[in-house]
Length: 266
Image (tube, rainbow, N blue to C red):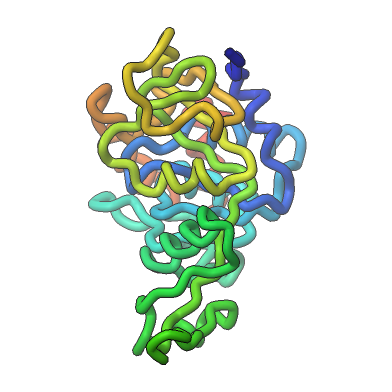
């Protein structure tokens, strides 16, 4: 049995400049916040990594912190925001100024792209986006003709993250993990990323069942409270006051810097 436990400081060094970094979780649930903060700290100390592509089925608080630092060059997500708490302020700030590249994505394009990579092929065909203007915004997304019935289909290109970070309810030292019922695309990320890092609320001696399995996982980090202030049901709820404070305090680079200094996160 291989003990894959490492520290957060070690884990963030897996992310290199220019990488596609995939963050697991869903909206304000089970987000790898502790990892994002440690990565941000590493960036401010070392100036790396930079020029990252952020991949997230939905992007939220932790992603906005990274955008605020200037680490993210482009975003691939079908939603970037803070649900009932409003817009993600730093994403909104930089996107409105054209300072960050936004690759148009939907649930379909992300799901089909990951499934293509899981299947080991360059694209996955589907009917999503047919009859819309979305292909005009994505010249890399092409149409094909089904060789069997002549139907026109959209060919969604495969997506292969360099590093995926997934927060788990519990994991063992080998990398088997439980992530709960709201899985998002975390299972797909574990099957497609070159490097998979788990942060876990608890390290258990063994698990009766696992959603993610050890052969797919490269590193395990013990990170109690590692999703806070997002929720990690059923272990702890969303800290709505903390998210609201973020949206009220942060609106531009100066207020972002004041926010992280105030909270002693960096």
